[in-house]
Length: 378
Image (cartoon, rainbow, N blue to C red; front, side, top):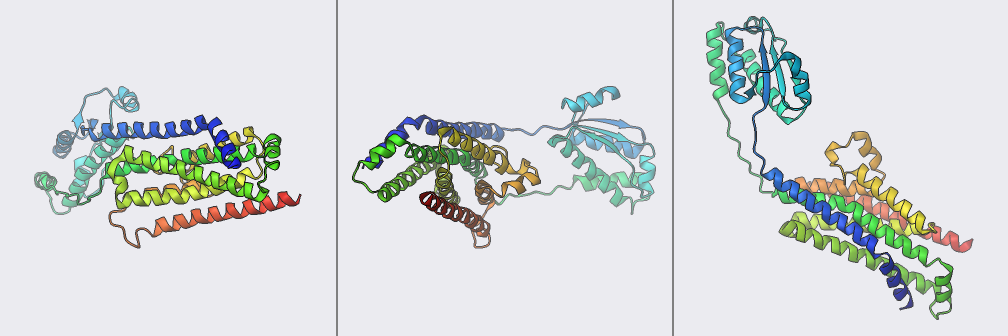
C-alpha cells in the first residue's frame, strides 16, 4: 500500500498534464465534427472558366456552347487571367486553336491550351472538356461532314448513366472515428509516457528510496507494485479515451468497425506502455522526460498521419514513419474505415499491423529487462 499511496501522490501532482492531453483530444474531435457538419452541407457549384476561341468554326462554337452548359463562362481580359487563377476567381482557362475543326475532321488531335487553378473545380472542368474532345475524336472516324459530327456528338453527350451507391457504411461517422483514434496516438502516447516516466524517475529520488527502504516491503515487491500501478494507470487512461470516443462519435463504436478500432488501440496501448517502461530505465530527470515526450509524441503525430491526413503525406515520410509504432496503428485505422464486409482477407492487414505492434512491444519489454538487469549488476 505504501507504493500505491506514493504513486497516487505523484499522479496527483502531474494530473494537469494528463488533463491537457485529454482536452486536446476532445478539442480536436469537436473541431473535426464541426468541419464534418459543414462539409455535409456543401452544395456543388459550377466551375468558372474563360474560353478564347481562335478558330471561330461551327465545331469550335459547338464546343464553347457545350462548355457553357456545364460550367460558368466569364469574360475576362487575357492579362488578368493569371491573377484570376492564382486568387481562385477563375478555375480554368481554355484556348481553342486555329484549325481546330480542320484537325478534328482530319482525325488529328488539336493542341488545346489550358491553364488550371489546381483545385477540384479545375479538374472537373478539365474532365468536361475531355468528354467533348474524346467524343469528337471517336465520331470523326465515321462522320465526314461537320454537321453530322456535331449532331452525333450532341446525341452522344446527352446519354447519361445513373450510378447507385450500394455502400451501407456510415462514412461520416467512420471518418470521425478514424480521425479521433488517429489523433489519440499523440494523446495516448504522451499521457502514458509522461506519467510512467515521471513516476519511475520520482521513485529513483533519494528521499523516496529511503522512505521505502525503512519499510518492511522488499525491493522486488516494490518494483512489482510500481509496474502494476503504471499498467493500471495506462488501462484507465485508455478506457477513458474509448469512453470519450463513444460520447463523441455515437453508436458506431458499438459496431464491428468500432470494435476493431478499440482492439487496435488496445494493442497500441500495450506497445506504448512497454516503450514507456523501457525509456524510464535510463531517464533520470523530469526535463529528460519532457523532452522525450515532445520528440516522440509530436514526431509520431506529424510523421505517421495523426495531425496530417495520411493521403497528404509524401511517400518518403511514410517510409521513415515505419520505424514508429504509431504508423502501423494509423494504417490499421485507415484500413478499418474502408472495409465494407469483414472477412479473413479484409482483416488480414489489420492483424498483420497488430503483429508488428506486438513485436515492437516485445522488443521494448526485452530491452527493459536487459537494461534493468545491467543496472543492478553495475
